[in-house]
Image (cartoon, rainbow, N blue to C red; front, side, top):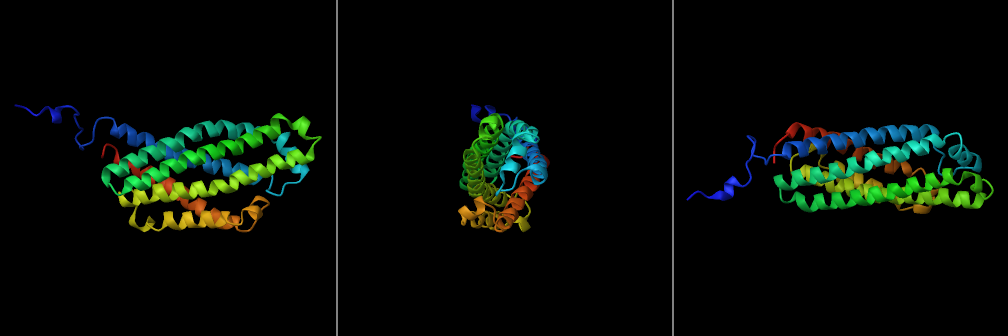
Length: 239
């Protein structure tokens, strides 16, 4: 009698179930899309966004002359939300299928990605509030400054979630052989730098040189997006 277990899920020539090639393609493209959005958003922020210790004039400029950047960030958040979660889910699935040790780390990366998405939503909420109620807030500088401080606080604590995402997805990718061997220390070191930058949280909210430490960790996250995203594209239908 023929064993029908092996007829239930036909596999491709590479040994992967049909659809896995598409899944890997979607995950890889999503990671690279998210990377492009990060680069674009951070370039705009570097040029136009108010500093952490913004003066009323800086916040007025954001709410009026530069309000288009807030609308732009809200639109790119929609794309980035989907891209980030698709990348995290696809990378975790691929790595867990290749090495069972990667499953735990992939779960950490996926759950951290959800936290990052939520916290970035709150960052956008603060900016949208500054624009939506700009006329009212112009007469209440204290409330305006409070909203900006909350914006900075959420952004600062988000570095911990980014660190968890980097550590989880980076370790999973390393164990499964998705990333080169030399990238092994990148995820844990980058996570450590991001977490260290958050420790003096109050100082960070108002702007601190230690933000540079967090920047190095953030660059590690961007490197992982590039290398792992391209890796998923190259692997096509592999399990």
